[in-house]
Length: 193
Image (cartoon, rainbow, N blue to C red):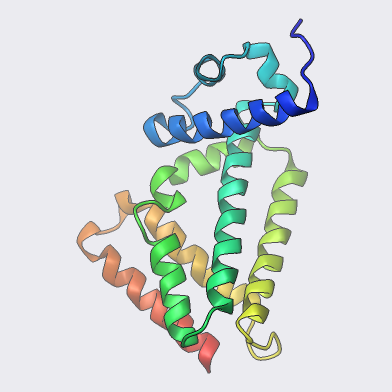
């Protein structure tokens, strides 16, 4: 039975798990990474991993949530900064959704589906509800009236860009950047009307 950890140790271990988990995610993906790889890299037993997470899939889901939250925070910071709104929206979408560092380049559509299938239904429902709250908050931070713009449309257009990045295997790679640009300009036109 794994020994108990102090609250400080738990916090430090969890942070190390996230760091190593992201490294393994980038290098091997979700399915090719096992709990033992991560725990060995962190220096804890496999059993100790389960003191922090119920499953490998829940662990990777939390990593995705952390990335998602950081993106929302950075997007809000950009929206609250000085400058034309169109340029700020374009920057957010190009830098954080269309870039090679975006999560869509790290995790394939199949791996996202794999994680989601393994999650308890209530976690997925919570995430989807939280997603729209994030988009409402971002629109309001940009000074866009929710009476004028449907936050679900903005959310869907943003997710279309993300899905395009995740599914490059079924799209013409030579046209992905231009395709994303067209969707971005359509989104900008919609929110600026």
